Amino acid sequence: MSVENSNTRSVESSNTRNAESGNTPSVVTVRHAAVGYDGREILHDVSFEVGAGEVVAILGANGSGKSTLIRTILGLTPLTRGEIDLFGTPQRRFRDWARVGYVPQRLGAGSGVPATVGEIVASGRLARRGIFRMSRAADRTAVRDALTDVGLLDRINDPVTTLSGGQQQRTLIARALAGQPDLLVLDEPTAGVDAASQEAFAAALSRFQSTGGAILLVAHELGPLRPLIDRAVVVHEGRIAHVGPPPEPAGHHAEPDHDHVHPHAVPQATGICVAPTDRIAAN
Amino acid sequence: MDLFQYDFMMRALMGALIIGLAAPALGIYLVQRRLSLIGDGIGHVALTGVGVGLLLNQSPVISAVIVAAIGAVGVELIRERGRTSGDLALALLFYGGIAGGVVLVALSDDASSNSLVQYLFGSLITTSPEDIAVIAVLGAAVLIAMLAFRPALFAVCNDEEYARVSGLPVRALNILMAVTTAVTVTIAMRTVGLLLVSALMVIPVAAAQQVTRGFRTTMAAAMAIGLVAAGAGVVVSAEADTPPGATTVILALAVFVAITVGAAGWRVVRRRVHPPHEVEPPDVVLQEVR
View 1: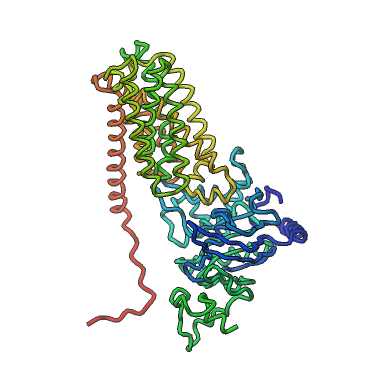
View 2: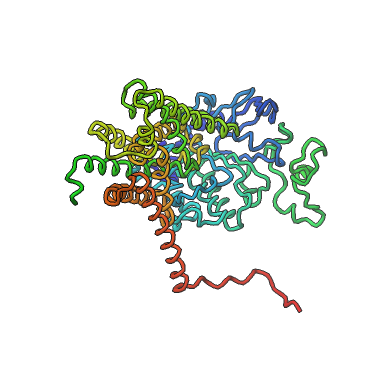
């Protein structure tokens, strides 16, 4: 894909990507993955796929291993057993990391050295341009386009610490978009984010998807992201408890008989699937 | 100024200015990743290198660079493991470094407390033309590396995991930073001394970030403050007959205090002129509580 394209991708570039996706079977393939820390296994035998242009949500209670799962896919946590392929290449040999845009749960703890929103977003461009080449006009355009996409262009020169939590989260998604990835991986993108930012977030993700990008996100609550989700993977106690259509649409929570039991409030021992049991039952 | 008709004063000033520029250019990354005191630790380790050099009758600057670089890479590898025991391992390395240095210096032919003090607190006046050449070359290398790799180093220091997922050579960049820390510490030991090295890396950054908004402007301002403090430190120390290293650090601290007080004063004035907006009413109907 051309580096010169701005992040609001041209029709041409998204066609290119869709053509590519015809040959590549999937964006992410996880086969029999097991992961552990210090001899304690957190994920056992997990398998699933993210297809090109697909939006997959990994759901599960706190401590279910869902964040570990995406950290393993990104190579931040080593696999104990099993295999992971990214764009058809085994993760160990995968080098084209510019195709992956990672959005962590929050901005790293501030160290006191100021950084502007523009500087943070520009660091998302490094995967594309490499560390030896100076920033060009196309790189600056990509940064501005990414910030426009999340509605923060007017804050480009502001210190990132002056932004609200939701705006900081949008800065992180702009950072990932600036690299023009083909896959976005988001860790709890809407946790603790204000409503306006959640809407801006959902809109940016929806535009990304409409150009053929695939999305893998970890979530506790889907909120305004729900309409985007093609498939949900529910992780429970280190195994996949459910793969299929996303849990019931948003109205469910508002039903009069809904007791509003959240995943984290459900006791660990109540059956196979602790995560959104209430919603899955309705399927 | 009369002082600068002497060659040794010119050399002293040149050495100080190079350090004044290079130390904050590196220090900003260390501050950003909360390793403000690492320079101090590497300074301890460099003392062992000085001891080795004196013992073997080699240039202590070169041997200190080598030993400090080995120490810094070792610290980086410990840090990378991310274990809490890393803290303890660092402490062992630092104390081993300074104790080893004191013992080795004592064993060398040049065993006087004077030579030790010269490295611990700096001694610009005895800097030879060869020393200045080494300081200039290494200082320029540090400066170029820190400026040329600014986006990549910023990315690593700002969010190391994100940098790793971006496919950046995180380990290579971390080792680059470890080695440049060692180099900076060693060339700065002539100016401010091993015990005050960290100050020139950290204080200009701390001063600059009181008033700056972005990383690039902070870096530029910190380098300017470092340059001024180091230059003024040499001049004032010569006039007042005080040790140049400590004088430089005190001047840098004075700049920090002045900027902090000035910025606080400016905020107060601005608040008077533009009072903050009224708080927006809540989105709910409030009932009067009787």
